[in-house]
Image (tube, rainbow, N blue to C red; front, side):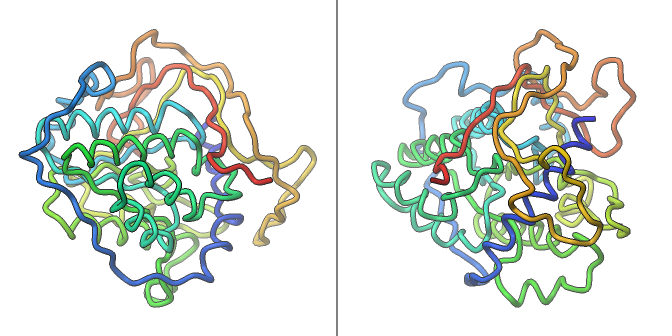
Length: 324
């Protein structure tokens, strides 16, 4: 199952990534600024700035948060979120886009966000991108943020936040008693919630690994914990969508052949191989990307999510800043 594979890969990514961020501390809150929505009119429109088919189902529920639970490392998933953000901003609405980058880098993300557009990408890539090869700090993720910044510079009311993991020692201590991966999930939720409350946003779009997007407790490693979405807001305030694809390839990290992880012990970096990996063949709906709050065709409803977003066949997106 792709979902099971993703959960295993996520565990690897957290071992590699969390150790690089815990030594850093950031202020408990950051200023997340947005422009004046009424002044914005998109300079160009097209299929990449139109709400996907099925979005009306989401809007009828009037959620505070729309969570896109992805499998990391595709070109198409960040692009899909960018399309939704662009289309909502084109209606004059205020948007926050939350991305699964380290919360200790959020201050640097905000500083880069305030720069002129020609300086943005260079500044942003200095904030935790180097050497990140697990599919999160991908060229597609960078392209998403560069696109959002360009829209912001045109007058769109768009803000961003990097929310992954504990932002400081106080937050880490506050959630430290939660079981299993619960502290990490709780920190993600609080970081998103705090950023969402900093400005009067109309929509909060969250791009995150699909384990964090589930609406049921997860049992793993002998512990049961609540995923981020369960700690973010009441269920009715969140629409959580699972990424569905027709196969293709993803840039992600996997255990090397023959490696058997030891329960309760971190996975060493040399036991992991990161790169473009093919997915298994999956049913193709032969449709352009869309959203649905119904069960996936010919399947029972997945009670972990409210629905799904369909991307078709996906392509792997390599690291934006390769590890040399």
